[in-house]
Length: 455
Image (cartoon, rainbow, N blue to C red; front, top):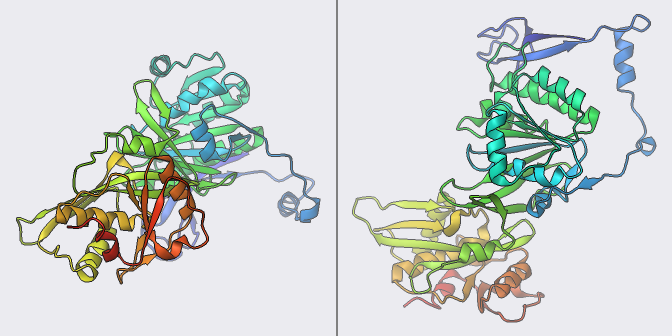
């Protein structure tokens, strides 16, 4: 086996031994990227073509045997929920997120539980073994089955994996790793891609569960983990603001489980702590006598999460009113503001509107539309929404309320949190069971909904 570095055009596949600004094959500029090419010498008894055919011989699906998919827990129920029940042998997992969001903290925490039965190799290219030890002491990680290594050379790392034969490998982070045969700098597309391919082959051949940490940068398409999403088995992304303690772990891709689940954590001095009831945490300390505050119920995975949407409507001091939002898509705010002006006869053209989701949660589903409109209308009229009222519904361009999915689960979550009234689309209540302790107010339009509290 021998490897050499070549440059391949991403448009036509032209291969060159050196980098060229313009591809001779298709004439495109800056399309040649460096790739590590491995060449195997064919057997003397068989030609190269025969070797390739034998390696990929087709088989009937009825004759293909597979083993039982065994999983083992990580020690964090929220992480197991996102993974689909736990780790799978040979699984390659990419953990992405902004720097400092908690990726390394999470992976070092699970070593304490996994180290009871599994042998773990933690490879860091950013910190020394002494620095990792200091962080491990703070997190209470002292298992003897955790091996620490500070290295960036992939060939040395692969040799260490072969010698120590760990059950789990953690690479922190992929942007610092490099292969000597590739001339590009660490973190470039060729280095990141070829490094991940080498780690993936090792993980599959030795049945090792492997975590790869990838930092998300402003130009993630070049050096970030998005280049690797098609290689790995599972892609996990950490969401949250570094200034807010709430952290959400979301599965973007998962070959061994669902991508509809999320894990909720809170960053504390002792590390990441699981949040079993996100609604209680997000609503904790909510003021009950302030205008412009409405509670919505969003579905995150298979469970409902109650969140407070705050709106502040003030007279503008400039020619053009300002629209700002945190946790809600700004384009959605523009749309709902236009609906309120046209359908609810609400004059907002001379007012600044600020929208915020308390706790740092990001809501991207349309079932929160009614709560956003209610918060804006309440702030505009300086009215206080009853503290035990929750809003669930999608708002159409005609001002009508559209049906939402899994309404019964949303109502159950609201009832468990002590809410007594739910404002919902009237047509969504057909054929569903209303939980005890909560009553529903079915409305047809957004005007009808905001008339319940507007003065």
